[in-house]
Image (cartoon, rainbow, N blue to C red; front, side):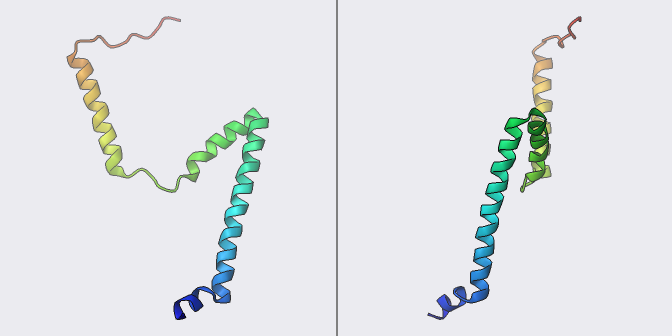
Length: 91
């Protein structure tokens, strides 16, 4: 019973209510932002520019190195296959 009393304290209940209210408020604001972006093309571009800033988990440097190695291997395979590099189109 002591364990339940710690979770039912006024401070804990206030914290839970604040977290729930914050999540609801965040969802409402995101919904309004999406509606605003759909009505205005410039708003959509602005919204898309902000999305990368909302990323909570950055890409670790080890994964970036792996991606760079994969790209280098693809270039090597293309060069070994004897394919000529693509020419730029004449405009």
